[in-house]
Image (cartoon, rainbow over all chains, first blue to last red; front, side):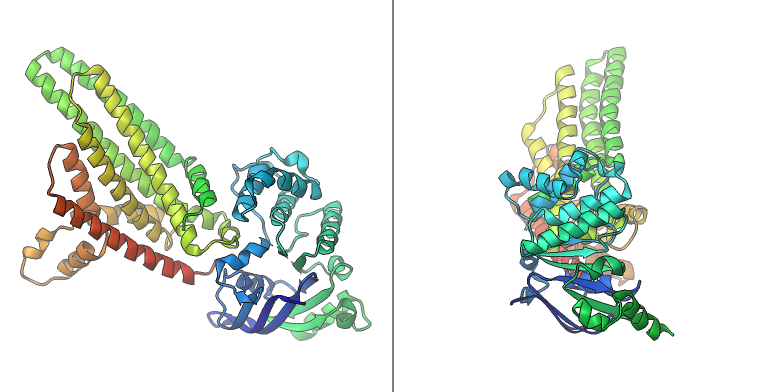
Length: 239
Length: 263
């Protein structure tokens, strides 16, 4: 199996603060990987470094076995930020059209892909609404729709359950499984363990910028529930 | 290098800019009211000699006013094109698309430039149409084309300057600093080098004159064209070459600094 990304001994500092330290991780095609950790563990820093939005202090980062700083490497990935937002005067449809255009989706296919993405997230009826008129949950669903409109091979979701009600969370989990069945690779940043326990093929527990445990849910849990294991890892370090 | 989607997005974004909308309405009203006032004065004076002077003055005032407003529009756009993406937290999303940072910068600057040129062109055509339909004045279209061309180049320089400054300050600060630098850049001339004594001001002048796009020179050529002045072609070529070279260098510096920036 080919690597989607590979991080080798990545160090990221903000001044004297270490955000990522000795961070090594690789991701194989077709996996759902959950990056778990408390607030400030370095999850978003890692994702932003992977996208080239932050510059790593040392180490190596590659995407599809290519340097992350080459723009063409991003053709195969889509990214949902922690707090999705877009220009308030755009409609939902024009937002998705913007994303589709930026992902170089053929113009003739755009309308169908936009409808499909909105249907997947159950927000087809919001198509003509302005971004400024949406609720937090609706906006999050639009962000998720944007992340799948281009049919990217690798999807990065940073806190995808943020602002969603239980129905929304269930929809996202179903979507995640569906995307995996289509052969997509998904990296999910989250601190909602219960949602990820049944979904992820692989979990990575981070704390204070370092990987503390990595493997399948069973391997990492080691006889405990994921929540209990996570609690022990994180709490044990902070005490 | 230019991303079409981002270019269109820049125009859609900035056409809603309240400052630009205000200036656009203000320009139209100024032209209409100013012209009406000129016609009223002419009618009340009813002297052929004075009428010619007023007609010519109307044309000059309109052109100077439009040029001034176009520069103001360019400064407003320059101070918001990048700032609005940063403040609305859309920048990380845009830079996660398969585009280079240079492409982002160039697309945003080109969009703002096209909008300011469109503003200038529309105002110019509107002003000239008003003059032509109500007065028997002769408009030299070749002069207008020449003036428009150099004004467009100047607007590009203004936007580049303002966009560069906006990377390091908030919207209001960028706007004020850009205006100050713009006014200063217009005052740097070769004449200041004639003084023999060394001074810090002279060094700054030297740097500004040779190492930055000469906005003052472009403005001078544009306005002089409108006034019917004829330029030596070599002088024009030198001015354009210097402007292009320095603009390229500053764009490269901007790109290098932006490449290092974390978002």
